[in-house]
Length: 173
Image (cartoon, rainbow, N blue to C red; front, side, top):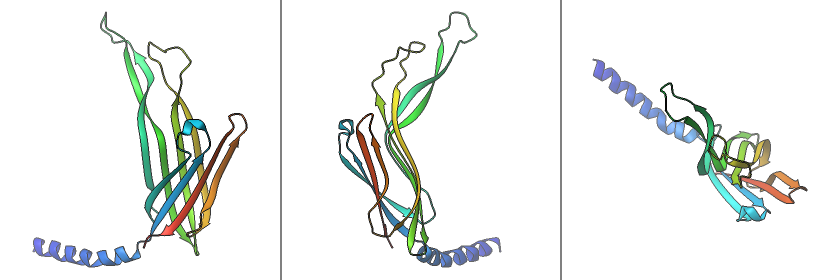
């Protein structure tokens, strides 16, 4: 009896799967980043994510960079100092959610561009911690489907760096 009930429940759920698949809305999100700084190495970079409506998509490429977050002296005499590390994600980290808003698309996203800068400070506890250069954008905007839209632009007069972020969202269904 128990096996028969489980089988009936599985068949009922299997019947709902095609309905779920039909109701899903998928979007292709293209993020174009134009960075005029010489350190960027690549003037234009494009990142493409396939995003299920109202669900978060995450894209990470780069390195896990260790930094000293603490140290301790073990209780035993003559022991060396122990060092604790925290790892930071450096490189390109993009998170976004997308959902339909009456013919347009709402985009909520976070873009983190980070890199290791040359470290000029002295070592801490014998370990040289990296200096992280970071540009972070949090955005929430509404864009038209299939229309490239500049969602962020930074002109920094101190470094003469120009950064432009453009998003293009199309339906993937």
